[in-house]
Image (cartoon, rainbow, N blue to C red; front, side, top):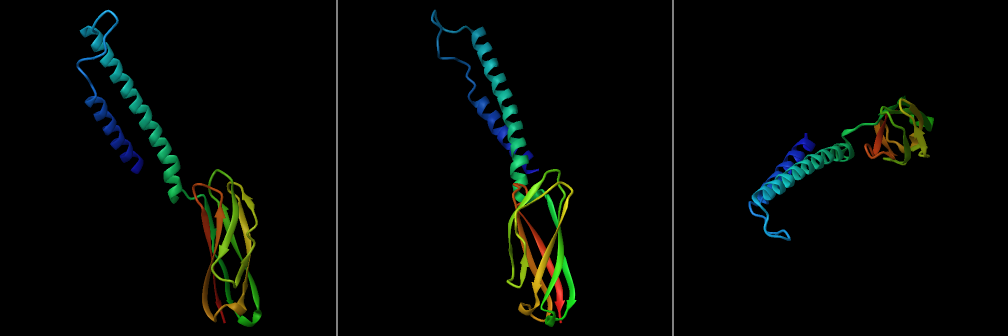
Length: 179
C-alpha cells in the first residue's frame, strides 16, 4: 500500500510540474524568424507527450524498486522459520542436556547462516556458515549447561544471522524446566 501511495504522490507532483512549465510562447527563434503557431503547437504537444511517458515509466520503475527492495528490507518477507528447542523437565544435577531446533527455508531461494549469538553463556550451539536450500530444514543441536541455569522454568534464545536482504535473522527459543 505504501508503494502505491508514494507512486501517486510523485506522479501528481510530476504532472503539476509539467503543466506549470507549459508555455504558450516559445522564445527561441528560428534562423529565418520566429516560430509559427503550428510549430509552437507541435513542440508543446511533443513536450507533453515525452513528459507523460517519462512520468509513467518513472513511476512504474519507482513502484517496482520500492516494493522489491524497501518492503522486503523492512522485514515483511519471511524466508526462514525456526521451531523452538524444548528440553523438558531435567534435574540440575544432570550437568548438560542437548535439545534440537529446526530452521526451515520457506522461500524459493537459498540462504546462508552467517553467524549468531546467544542470550546466556549457559547455551552453546554451532554458528558455522551453512547454506539452507529452498524447502530444506536444518536441525541444530543446542547444548544447555544446567549448572549455569537457575532452578525453575527457563527460556533462553539464540539468534542466527542470514545473508538475505529480506530477513536478516531468525530467533530460536530454548525452553525447559530445571529441577
